[in-house]
Image (tube, rainbow, N blue to C red; front, side, top):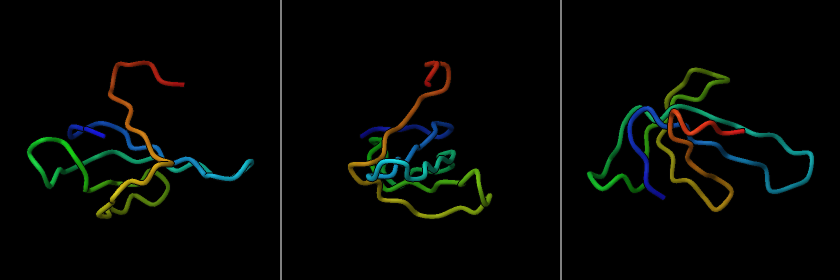
Length: 66
């Protein structure tokens, strides 16, 4: 998984009917765009260090996600 500042990290629930969480990537800790990322979560506006798991994906602005 590679990302840039400004991309959106989306974490889907692994269970049917579960929640979805998304946030903006505000900082990278590696120059190659690999995790971990500092993410500002849209539901709380808090920034957290995130190591995304297999239930997460990155959307790049302008790609026209779902």
